[in-house]
Length: 215
Image (cartoon, rainbow, N blue to C red):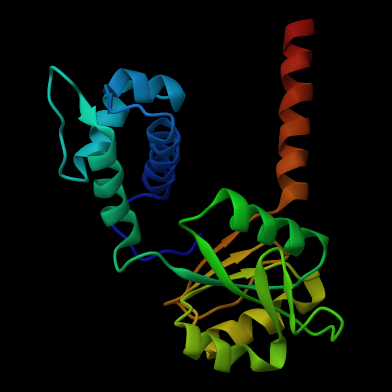
């Protein structure tokens, strides 16, 4: 991941996980939580949780621990900086549709406000709760909606062209699902999710562990 931050990627990932877990707890009516309880839910250590949460400036109390809603707000202020980002997705195939549905119904605080494709049969429609536009209108819609982040779910051969379109329109962060590295300006943060590589890694270590057990 290309990034511009003094905080490690792993720390940001843990804070995002804590927030998701805390929101689930708050939805079930829980009010307070101790660091060891959050650590157990996050498969982490109490010491690591406390170090991470110190970044928010909120330490809780020995008697009640952390107040969940306050902690969610502190983490959100730290992660979201200028508020909740608006996201554009390019590529309304099977993966794109799945992501649109997931964000519409499972992630109310992360909102994909516009989707794009070059297929006329997919544009000027609402798919997965999101208005879909033609890719030629990308820059106009990004400016109108104040979009800052992009998700790429197109085939590998089209990913770089889409990334170029995004950066030219002022997108500052890109999550790439296409199985190809992207060339972007240094001020654009990118991350790539390569499902095939991840599965190959899991398969390798599964075989490695089984081999060691057999020996």
